[in-house]
Image 1 (spheres, each protein chain N blue to C red):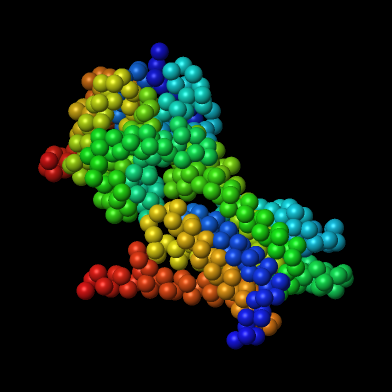
Image 2: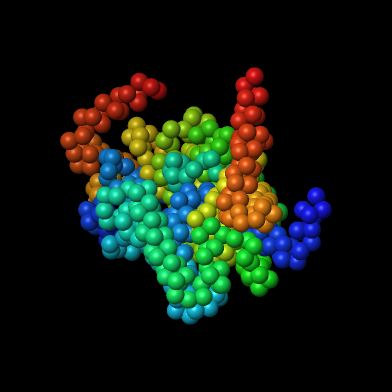
Length: 289
Length: 250
């Protein structure tokens, strides 16, 4: 037990804990809108597509810089979403297949670039190899500071545009009718998703970050019928998943962090599905009796 | 001065023309029913007037000013089926959405706005449902929430897209009462409507549409069998049978 507590007294672990809490909170809040907009799969494609963008930036500039990664990830994620829309519009391919194609193409390309970096430069030292499944233990203080600031900014922006996001999600036509800039707001939400992906890439990895966006708000939906409460609860569930995933992967050495976070989030979701106070299965069963 | 004037509007979808040469001008304080067969472009017309769809050509003016400068004067009741009613919110919150352009960016609704939204719910007989989840409302009640939201907009020109489709008697009455009130207040209303049986009761103006306006004007002059035949073409036999069915139901 004391060995367990010792781990928490380590400065690095405390940093990781703070970072994972905030990252989880931001992804849960933003994920609430993604989920209600029915863009879960699109956000997964965007996360996977962020990998080649980040790698290209590293190859060009040879430094690990979050602002540069943000630019690269935004560019490739946007290319991915536009490609999905173009495929749906100009061919007979349906949206699920279009998303499937784009995810694999961009992720495959990202893996190729990542392998190239690892073989040809100091990519291992930069921690780029952990970008696939995430490794909290590889974070240093400056990484966590960036996650903290980034998560804070993302949550503030979401709170500022809460009312407008709500209306464009619920009824985009009415929103446009009263003069809200709907395309701008949709673009802003996508940008927030890219923001979560980029600040979370080292800790969670691109493969599973979409699960951290979707699962906590999905669990929250079982407890409330109010969007504001859902977003905050989604944030809390995300923070819990993030922190427990980070701790578990640090305590049990060499476990990847992303999968541990997603397993934590899935546990919360499963409990909510069963016992949620608004839509839980147990509640329905009790009502029927 | 006309409340609404549409000039040479044309809309295509997948390179197929959906609306062509649409020009008409609606007098202030009138109640217009937009009538036509399925696929005539009725909903498309409303949406393109409201700039929700891209148009190929044409322009829209509201009280002689370009539409974009007059957005605050426009109220809109979309088709109920176009939104996801499982969205986590309540009736009052939906009505408040009609006030967002008045509330402005980065601000929350204040007490005055909330009171006004409650008044609007009360006017459509939904005062008791303010805090009810929208997923738990009946179809007619959902329609009345949309009406209250339009009411909350406090607009001068209202567009409604098939408000009567699939609603109960109480909701139908609420819609008719509201339209009459709007007319008395000098507001202008355009309604996409399906039931030919009720056109003469509800509307003082009619736009007969089939990809292009067949006729526009006062109901008694425009709503004639001749004109209906021109708008509905060969489907008129079916139409008369449909009318008979409606009478039976009544």
